[in-house]
Image (cartoon, rainbow, N blue to C red; front, side, top):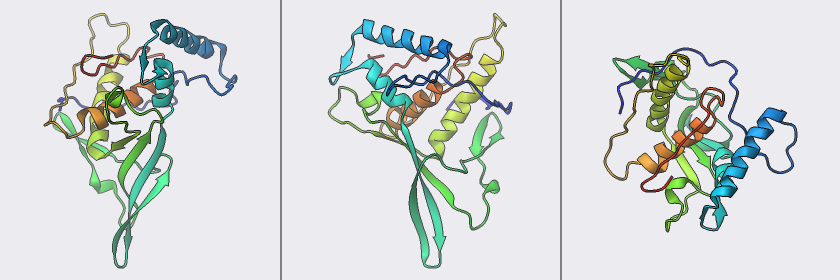
Length: 214
């Protein structure tokens, strides 16, 4: 885990990366539609196919992944779990501890529903499974995976806010862990999703590498 602190500077209303133009969507600004069309033409020019789908179709699937979440429901006879569609109304919060972040449990209210898991569903699965025998549509995000994103977001915020400073380069982030803990399946997929939704004016290109593929 990198030793970088997440920025506390609020982002406010951010301009999102161009949403894929499909199903007849024509209500986007001309500049946004033009940027999306350039990406579409680039994808077609690459003519790269995985499992019979073009990369543009895969991009749409990842970008438009659907949210759901699981909360812990306290009851008289123990604790139960309930699943809901959409993003959680009360996501996890984190606090700075030294040079990193830790989950802040002090903000949780007694008796309130506690978020236990977030799920992002991509109809055409996630990059780590493309071309493999497995085809997992769901990316499971726990509080540790979210913590990884909060740290990376702090690095990106710091770097993007310093545009114009020629000597400013983003700090590298390395996620260390034993095989099978979800570095590619969970953290890698979630980072890709969040970076694609970062302010497109500040982060214009997201380059995703997985093994010997990009």
